Image 1 (tube, rainbow, N blue to C red):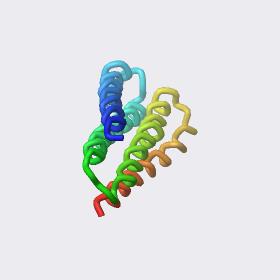
Image 2: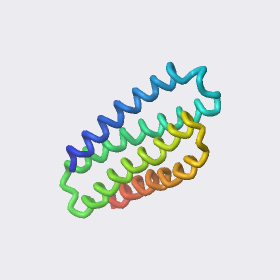
Image 3: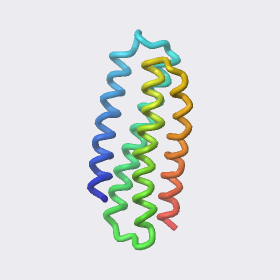
Image 4: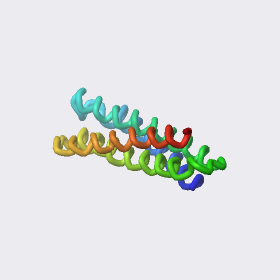
Length: 123
């Protein structure tokens, strides 16, 4: 599982950097300042949680007899959060379809649950 989260974190980080550059150079002037800010929020949380996936991968390599399942849960929750939270913000900013904003809180809850799972693993 550690390799899975290492790969997921590395790919997520690469995509976040690419999307950040795309937002800064390709979308500036094409989106309203408000929608550009929405896109940038997606990129910011995407990168934070790419780094969280790398942390999860590092923790998964340790022998954590009681925290192993919680660490794995945290990793998958971070992946889900990136897809749902950041993904919905990217689509909202680019398409203007406001119904996509209803998905964003589900991704936020996934992020929160991932951090809670890491806290449980620490206990």
